[in-house]
Amino acid sequence: MPRSVFSPPHSRLPSPTPRPAAFLLVCALAYAGAVVGYLPLLTLLLPIKVDQVAGDGRLDLLTVTVIAGAIAASVANIGFGWLGDRLVSRGAGRRGIMAGGVVATMASYAGLAAATTPALLVAGIILFQVALNAVIAPLMAIIAEEVPDGRKGVAGGLLAMANPVAATLSAALVGASRFCEPARFAVIAVTVAACTLPLVIVRGTRQGGAAAGVAVDAAARSAARLDRAAARADRGQRAVRLSSLFFRNRRAVGARVGARRKDGDGDDRRL
Image (cartoon, rainbow, N blue to C red; front, side, top):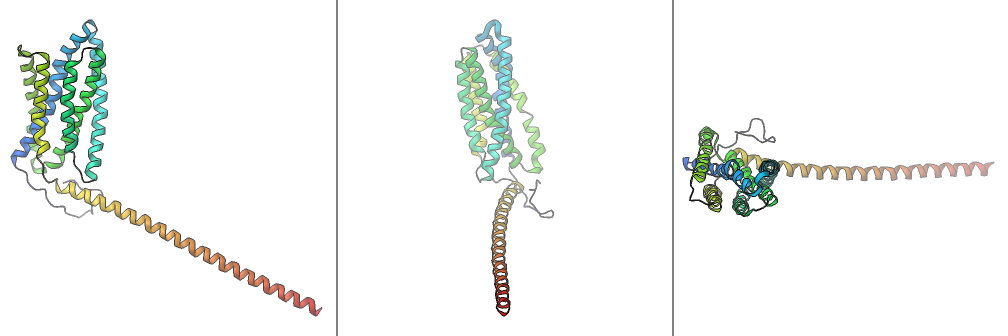
């Protein structure tokens, strides 16, 4: 079980509450929805769309689109992962990011279906990559945090089913001649929402190690603030003591100088 860096070396954290097999299926379904979100689009639908928009310049446009989308995906994944960590540290959760990502992904599919110029297509792919990674980043963190250690092997096996499911859907969409282009995009968008939203709704207790780690980190930060306040107060007391000592020494030196002057005046009078 993961342990916070602030945890005592011999402390024992409570074991996570076992989750039913249904929760593993919900996680696997959500991950399959995320893979369905990008695999059919990037492998089949995007090349078809690029050919329709660019014609002879399809290779250049496809290259630019893929590179721009990859950069946007990398930055967005890191950014939404960081945002999720910040929300969890403040007592919130990651599911709000995931829900917003699902809505934005559906909107990005509508934009891609309506794109008629190379610039709009590139912009649509960038929006799509940002939106989909707002789903993937919190999704992977939720699976890591909420699936018990004793069931992570089963969860990994279930997640491996996502690629075959997405590939089957891709082939079905391309092979179904009765589906026009907007209908294909709509089918993918609805599938993504139907697969990922159950995990947004299903909530449960985080693993004991993660919850305890957050609590211990908060306590450590509070203790550090108290230590800094005590250090400032100690520095202030030292400054007061030094000032008092300085003035006492100054008065003592002044008294000695005054006594010497009186002794000198008495000697002058005797002479």
